[in-house]
Length: 484
Image 1 (cartoon, rainbow, N blue to C red):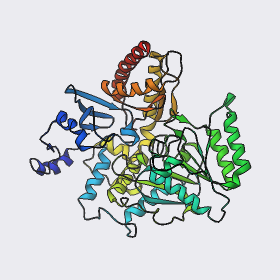
Image 2 (tube, rainbow, N blue to C red; image 1 turned 180 degrees about the vertical axis):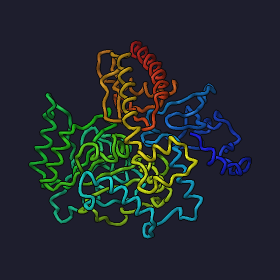
Image 3 (cartoon, helix red, strand yellow; image 1 turned 120 degrees about the vertical axis):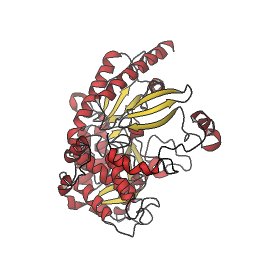
């Protein structure tokens, strides 16, 4: 991306302490990583790869152990955050413009600003084609996905306060809703629950599965029957439309439709945890836009800022707008640069609004200008999905005994690893995620699968490099499997 005019603005910083390319330390990568044990807690330290620069899904790096240059293809959006890839030029330009102004960089919840109202209206406008936009409100003051899940549950509980018999909360096996205590309590995957036992009012139902002939499984039908029969005792149901930690399992659309119907008739709050799918990964801003099934509350984070700031939100029907202090506004949720990022991400995904399309700087690269007029959901999303489909199909053709049927939807995909007997293997999935990195591809383990969740600006050149790296990876994994 040629941004010569922008770089000219930075030329005065060359050689000063503000030079963005100036080394921040006298130590090299090996010395830095060797100090992990005295600097960082376990699990939080950098390791293996040293990154120099990046754009889109491509990261220029070095393998620290061998001092070998590495072109890394990020097929996981930096752990499911960067829908626009690394260093999106429009988001950075908008943030740089804001920083260069006298606009406040931080505001407490009681202080207003045009940007806050602009973002609220833009997000709520995304629900216009799904339902009555006047029936929704938004909370923009959460810091991460766990916060948003907790706030959604609080809002549902608060709304049910007048009916104390509604004490139960329904959730599902295979779920993962975050790392704070509340989010852990409603998740089957609970790596962080160390401090307290789970409450007795959280009811886990089986993972919703399809059955034969495009019907629902017996257990899924039983779940719906139970909620129908006992619905008056439930205040909420929380569900991930795509359970990424459950080998990237997509909940059947028919189940979501019937769940929506039961929740409506039994006055149960239906909550979608949309951390993995929202803001572009399934072709729309929300899963309701993808499927037509509207929850009562959506909890959204991650791609919201495409990694350019920490922020999470809920979008809720008006009946769930009552929030008690201190849940409504988290301490570090007032960073205006995060709101600038959301605004820029919406520009990129949906296209610029109204007259702004005619106000683009003349020096902006023509390709970027065209994307900003059309929106990436219309132009880039179908192309990126096609590239991923082709990649997964070719890998399965090359490794038919190792790779199971692809899972997931849109740009949220999973490849299940099979042992020699054809059974899904967590051991091989874990090994694949590690070996991938050595060959220049970043993915994540998702139980018996590896998660592929690339950015929307993924290119054919990047998938070609990824195919070569993944082929080398799966050759290694086949040898590992056969030696075991």
